[in-house]
Length: 64
Ligand SMILES: [Zn+2]
Image 1 (cartoon, rainbow, N blue to C red):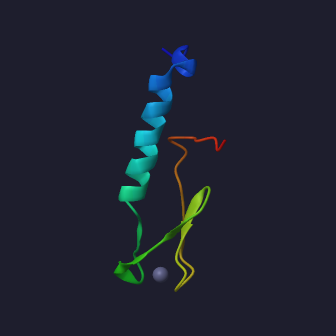
Image 2 (image 1 turned 180 degrees about the vertical axis):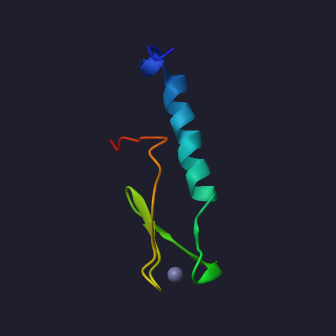
């Protein structure tokens, strides 16, 4: 099923993944639920206390 890379449905799937990532924004465990972590390419970080959380390499996205 990995051969379906060029199909439009595949890119649509990635869009959903991206949206999901945005919706489930990480909050800082140190500052509390009101503080969101800034999203970076491979990690999240808190601007208040500097807490950093690395993303798990589940969905590796390529920015084009
Ligand atoms: Zn924090």
